[in-house]
Image 1 (cartoon, one colour):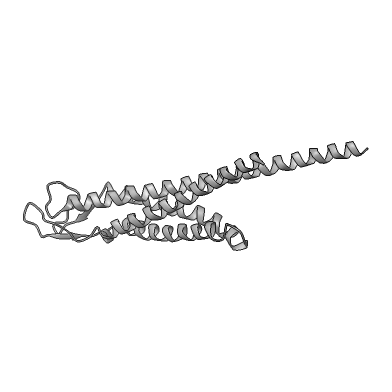
Image 2 (cartoon, one colour):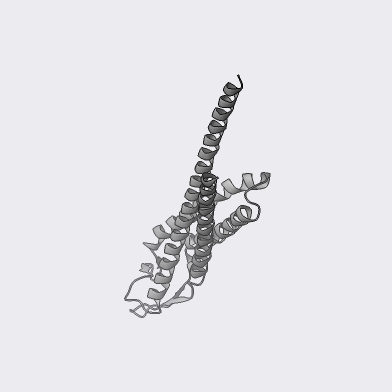
Amino acid sequence: MRCDDGKSKSKGRLHAVNIAGRIAAMGLAVASAALMATASQCTIILPNGGPAHTVTYSDFSPFVYLVVANAIAAVMVGVAIFLSVWKKGRGKCSRVLLPLLDIAAPALLYSSTGAAFATSEYLSYCSSYGRRVSVCDGALGGGTRSFCSQVRMAMYISLAAAGAASAAQLVKCLALSTASCDDDSSSSSSGSDDGCAHGCKH
């Protein structure tokens, strides 16, 4: 009985860590999407007297993808939490959806974050003079530093969300492997007991 209690407590702890990781991933994904979506209306004033230019996150398609992907991933993780906690992962729907959600959510987060990081190195636009102007040039006015720091913060938060989702999936796999090992040991133990009982009867 004590061994069974220890095993059930271990499974319970792993399940709790898994749910905590999912909640963290969902919260971070929402925060990243919100932070990126509010990175807008940054007016760049050229030092040589050129026309001002307003930059928003929507001017860069990878940033739009990050917002959409993080929002979708947050919904996916929320559904996974519902299926894991309230449905206990049981039922045909839960058994089919949970593995798909656990794969799709981190994939969205990693792909969108990678695309955003790749774009952040070359944040620029084409000015009316026909030359590229770097958005994050410290010599420019109009709050470009605030825009760039907000964009980068959103990307790092998205990366953290992807890491939390992956950690939750790792803990889930660990819990499943532990349960599988326990089932195998129980089966072998019961088999040996039956054999012993059969031998005693004869």
